[in-house]
Length: 265
Image (cartoon, rainbow, N blue to C red; front, side, top):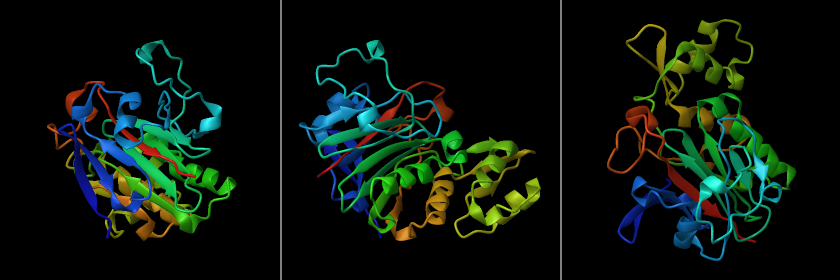
């Protein structure tokens, strides 16, 4: 059983997960806004280098060797030309990697043997193009063993609150190996309703469904060999907690909360 705990820093709340106890990490609440990762790294490990991206709702995952660290004196992020991708994997110790979210899933990954970590932004587009399995493949290419990986999925919009079109649900469903041979919409969607903790829920509106984006990501991870015990899923819903978390679906504002993790060597 993985334990999620709210901590306070200067009376501001951030969330941690016991599955990532080996690494300084945090899923930061909206109350830290407008602080940037350069500020937030002070909560986790002030000596760590800071890396972030311009997120584009894709499935590219970069190594920190492919981007430049943010100067600790960074004051105006709008003047920086960010690399475009939706995930970062560290190369050595004392590197912090960060993703921003406001309904999409912030995912932090660690290897308990190498100390390497990753931060992934998984919205429905990234999930439909299998960003997490691609990130796991990069860990493996760098020598990680599947059994040594630990994954925590932070606050995101819950399945009960996340209405999508049937087309989006089909794209998500098509990523799961159990329905690789499906040839029709019903063959893709129908099995998903009957899974334990189903990732797909019905919706009263025609041609609309509700999707649990974190559950889709967990099923993708299990399909590439992770045991469910290696995956921790936060129950916090961004849409339902306006006092703690930004939600684009709820407020239609471009405001985000940050999640980050620091590697060890």
